Amino acid sequence: MLILASQSQTRKALLQQAGLHFSSVPADIDERAIETAAIEAGGDGRDVALLLAQKKAANVAAAHKGAFVIGADQTLSLGTELLHKPEDRSAAVMQLDRLKGKTHRLHAAVSLARGGEILWADVQTAELTMRDFSDTERDDVLDREGAAILSSVGGYRLEGPSIRLFETVTGDYFTILGLPLLPLLAALRSFAPETLT
Image (cartoon, rainbow, N blue to C red; front, top):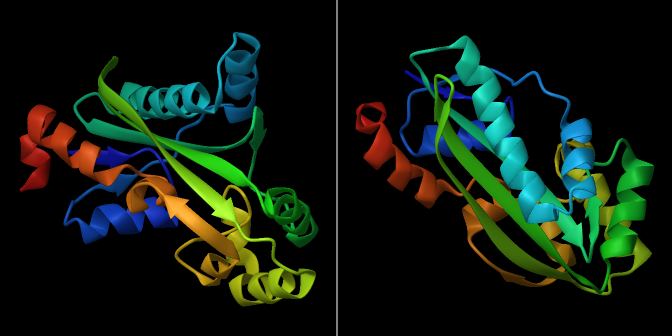
């Protein structure tokens, strides 16, 4: 049995497109408290993403003893600052304006747990540079994206009209979407080959 410890539509779609059969159970953790503790201990965006992915997988695995559980998380680093999903359109405007003309990093982590044990974990990083876009271009993209941008860290979706705001993107596409799929599939082949049939 395979479980995704998330309700993310993007992550569910990626696993479905890969032909995996799984159920989806959201983890019951306090993400901001975990993030704060990690940063206070000297962690950065990569560390936070990896820790959250592991905590999500462990939380759900504890309640589903025989299942293999996938935990995933993504953080956005602008220098040493972490940005989060915008709460509304005005917050998305402020985030995009902060990212405009700058390079930021997306850290996507994924882990696999069973019972009380983390079997495997990995974190990948992509680097993205936004154009020096106009307010009109920004507003047009936000109009086209609608509420979808509220579910994405940074307030944009590379798989949607937001791609118009970017100058360069370096890194794995699946990492950018928030789930390093190729390393995950390799881990499933090693630890849980029965989940691939």
